[in-house]
Image (cartoon, rainbow, N blue to C red; front, side, top):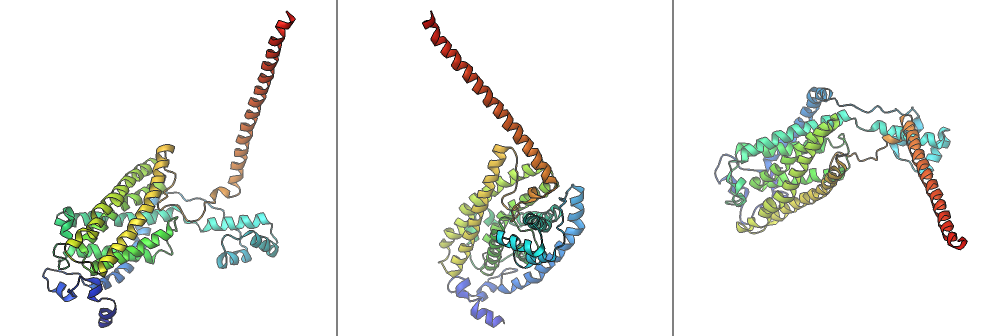
Amino acid sequence: MEILLNQWILQETYWLPNGLTWRDIEESGGPRHPLPRDLLLTLPLALAFVAIRYAFERVVALPLSRKLGVRDRIRVRAPPVPKLEAFYQQKNKQPTQSEIVSLGKQCDLTQRQIESWFRHRRNQDRPSNTKKFCEATWRFVFYLIAFVAGLASLIDTPWFWDHRECWRGYPKQPVTEAQFWYYILELSFYCSLLLCVSVDVKRKDFKEQIIHHIATIFLIGFSYCGNFVRVGTLVMLVHDSSDFLLESAKMFNYSGWRKTCDTLFVIFAVVFLVTRLVVLPTRVIYSTVVQSLDFFNPFPGYFFFNGLLLVLQALHVFWAWLILRMVYKFVFLGKVERDERSDEESEIEEEGAQEGGDQGEDESCWEHRKGTLNSKLVSLANNCVLNNLTHQRRNLDSRMPKAR
């Protein structure tokens, strides 16, 4: 297997500059050097992260959600209708008009009853605030620990302050134990996120998140094998610096702590925009694209690594646009209504369309509209009366000289 990997996947001509081999990296001295076989450790660690997350959400996150006052919406359950349930599970969760008519004939129900059943059934599958709170808490804890540990392991290194040091002596650069575990644990965590993507809450940017996870896994794995560890640790640190702020804002949002959530979101927006749109492209990506060429000639790994960084940067621009929309709402409307970067669910909100409680809302809205309409009609009538009186007064004034 190792010979097959070396012949087809781990060829030095793809991963390393011309004239260098994996043996050259091993013989360069130092306590540890990155080798492709080290990545096999991430597979059991990813499964371990899934198990730890399962226990953490039930032992820590769930009791914490109750203490912080997280409340779940009470949703009306759809009555059991086997034909509609089979259609919902196998064909479509949002039937078309023709399908609704056909289902109504099969089940002997009205069109309104069919629409109401599918609405309640979709709402029944929506994740609760408690589930979303537990997911956010798990990610918050990991990102916070990763950021603190990464900062502690990098702040004393020369390449943390001077990015040209990332390439001095490349690729014969030793790796410390702290940097090794920082890399391996980050890669294992993102692999665990990809494993759990089918059971996690699907959000508005679900496709972008999948692309982000895949690009991040390839970026971390390739940068480790190609010994881009120094610049790779900087990229991971920049990402972790804002992610834990976002997850903390989500936690307080689900708990109903609006002022705390808004404050954390504003702090997150500032940190995200500065780190992802200023620091990352002007310092880190500039170093990998331009400054690195002062130390070696371009090779396939150079183009692949920078291509993945540009994919991540494009996603950052997309998320920055969503965040700026939220900042606009916060400044001009006075509050953050929804986290458009990652917290909005992918499906259309239908809670306001439920029957029962919504009928009262419709009646109150109709009363309000009727009152507004009556006031406008009264104002219009008064204006008409005033116009008539003014017109008659002008006619009377025009006739007075003639009468005199």
